[in-house]
Image 1 (cartoon, helix red, strand yellow):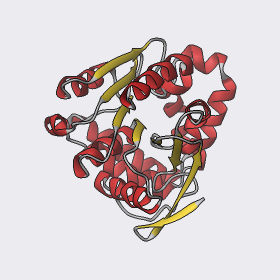
Image 2: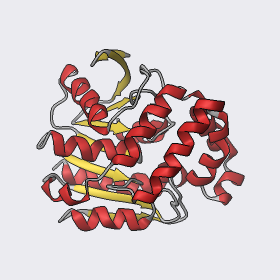
Image 3: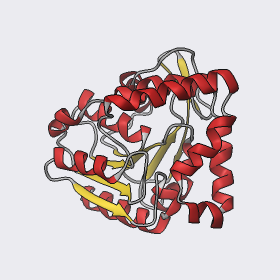
Length: 262
């Protein structure tokens, strides 16, 4: 389904009945990154998944995006669908959108799950994002596929679960260049650690033990900045910990949301 927000169309899907639960995906993925979670959680929640601006079947306007604009897209979608007090789950870029939203629109989330994400990047990381922009503008998304998969999954998983790897590779290839570039301008500018103490809803921080992109140290920094938050480290998982260890990920996520929903 499509919904017009801020001069563009956002693609979304809603499944299940119960309290609202919103899921936001990583860079170079789309709402199908959450297929397994939606199947499980829609048995007791009304699950809203959506394609972030520049991804999936949502519009991909040209130009640099900001995390604030991505949060505003989400806010317009939630208002348009009359979503009240949702639980929010975001992974990587989705977690950055969640943090930005929770601070810009305080009191809106009933709970917040921040998965394999960060609240800030060191200044020296900026160059890597510039390089990615230059590469895809010159050669398209194909050069991003292999190095991204190597960061997102452990070597053992890449070898043993080729069907998952192929699904994610297809999502990376299908990401519009303008959307990827727009988000690559937004992501490295995140700098929210000092403000996280102002988030008042329950928070869980979930991270793959072997995540090289947003490592455990970044998750620990978020956890340390959020009094009362819970930290869960998923063993034998890299960046897309929900896909690499779905049972452990969903156990941790489900227990947290169920407790926060009481």
